[in-house]
Structure formats: C-alpha cells, structure tokens
Amino acid sequence: MLSFEFNDEVPAPWAEPDHKNAELIAQAPGIWKIPDFLINTEVVLLKNNLDADEERFETCAGYSHEHLDCKFCFRLTFDNCRDEECALLSKMFERIRAIWPTKAPQRDYLYVQRYEPGCSETFVHRDMIEDLTSTATSTQVLYLSSGGGKVYFPNALPEETAIEPVEGALLTWLNVHPDGTDNEAAHHGIKANPADAGIRYSLTYRVHFDDHQGVVQRKLVCDL
Image: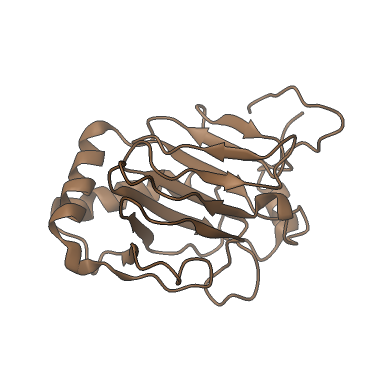
C-alpha cells in the first residue's frame, strides 16, 4: 500500500487506488494522478480514430455542460469501437477496473469528451451514477492530449487544486465520504480551453459501490 505524510488539520483519504504509480495530489477528497497509464501507441491509436470518425460525437447531455456548443461526447462501447480500438478497449477496461477493485457491477463504456479550441468552461458539478440518484464513488479520467482546459476542484484541501491534462495520464478521485454521502471537496469543473490550444480529448469512467462499508472490507482503505 502507498504511504503519505498528512497534515493533521486535513482529513486523509479514506481509500486509495490500487496502483503502484499513483501520486497523491490533494488529500481531500483524495485526488491521484497516474502518469503514463496509456503508452504512446495506445494514445495515438485512440486519438487517430477519434479524429477520423467525428460522426460518433454528438452534443453533450447533462446539466454541467449542456450549455456548451463546442463540447462533444459519445459513449465508446464494444458496439461502436473500431477494429484495433476494440481490442484496446478490452485491455483498458481491465486496467481501469483494477484501480478500484470491486465485485459490484461495472459500466461497460468510456465517456469520450472532445473540447474544441476556445471552448468555455464546464460548470462546477459532482459526478453522478447513471440514474442520477446518488454520487459515483470514484471517477477516472484518461487524457489523450496535453495542455488545454484544466480540471479544477475549488473545495479541495489543503487548497484549491487545478490539474493540467497530460497525454496518457489518468486522474482519479473519490467523490464521496466513507458512508457514501456526497463530498463537496470532489465538486469540480473544467476551465476554458484556450483558443491557441489543440482539441482536448478525455475519456471518463465512474465506479459506484452501493455498500460503502463493503469498500473498506475490499481493502481499499488506506493502511496508515
């Protein structure tokens, strides 16, 4: 397990990702970065397919970004993946699901988001499960490009945190407290994509546990 030095005035994360290269960025809600989660050839394959297949994208739905006409989304699944992309998708699911291991049912898609240069910011929001009845336990975001609009957490502790996308990196954070209730420190937005930046691609995956006490029993709690 990873070990950290914590400020006594800031709560330590109640769980941690199961990945040897996870770097803690913010103690609350618990935000980690995993560099080089995707290798260059994987990034290139995905990015080239997305650039060449724009018809898969559509206007994003959701209260946090439906106001944007410069952001486009779609669900990447085994039903709409392309050739080598499908084989890679299978490997990605296996690696992503291992970060927060659980026996609970897991989603079978990645939510792909495309920000055009000059796109304005996405409102601060919380990540919900599909039926919008509760907050997702954890979020994973994979980046296919470097630079562009940063994801920011205005309520993070010990201070507001903004993370710039890095190609191939994965960002993950906890959205809830140990009892499953919403953690405001995880509320986040995406800053405007500069006009001189390239297209910003990200792929999002969310994990949800109905029984959060079961999370502790699954040994996701920090060993401090």
